[in-house]
Length: 400
Image (cartoon, rainbow, N blue to C red):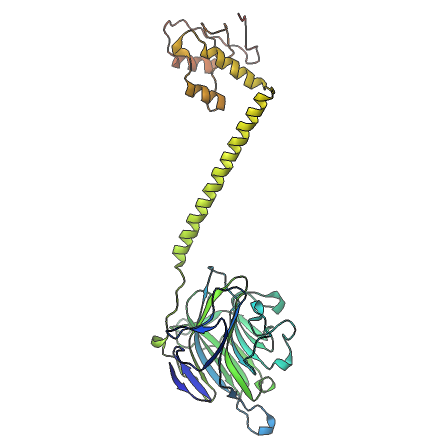
């Protein structure tokens, strides 16, 4: 609920009952979680504080008050690991009407006709997760300051300064982990600072972005503050957990313990294991189908060759040898049906031998094969004779 709310400042540790204007796919869940986008493709969501903030930029007023400070917690949970929608933009706009805006890379703020026009009078801080070449984005994980369009005047990769370690550390905007952002503008110095960090870290001593800019040339007397987000062909669940804003001083810190919970992304390890399992199953199925296809093709080709009468020499020789061996006078020498199939399928090399009692006197063989074969064939008479002949000799000699 709102801890403080008036025309210049407000603090929301959750958005139940918040004074917000929502449109598009944006919604507030019963637990106070503000969701800007869901997994719907090519959609936009907006959430703006519906009371306009007075900036007094007109020189005729004699008094200008442009300084402001804001702090919010956001999280982007991608539908697909390492792929997301088009990010979130904190926005200061003269209007809450974005009916002419385009989704996808335009973040629900502009279209191809008005992008970059000075008449937009719009300031946005983008937390962008897609590299768009048309906007000269530096990468697919960056923070940028946009004035009247999406070509950032300054941007930097997502990093934060670790106060304890004294170094910059990378920050993955679509990690599915909540993070804080601080945006501060000092009117006296014309200095705009943007700072980010993981949710449990204190505000870093160094800003991610810092630029001198005169906002009096951009903002109007009355402006609306809020958020815009959009999805494209890939979507993500983009949330705001808490938000504080102050027009007259430093924004109040959020009470992290009171922020609403959000649906967590599936554990990456579990997701990776699932993806690996599915991949292995798919590869196995493809291999099995391929092997069956090859087997069918080979058998079909052999079948067609046999039935078309296109006998190959080797196949004819094998068939003749098998016929002779199967008709051997010694039953123990005859091959089993299993052996016949192995010979036909080429799984076992056919021993080339000379057999007594077969339909011929001689079959072609080589020395090594003949010796090994006869050692393994049972004999009732022990009268087998082994000869060595060239494999180029005729298969039949002295046939009956």
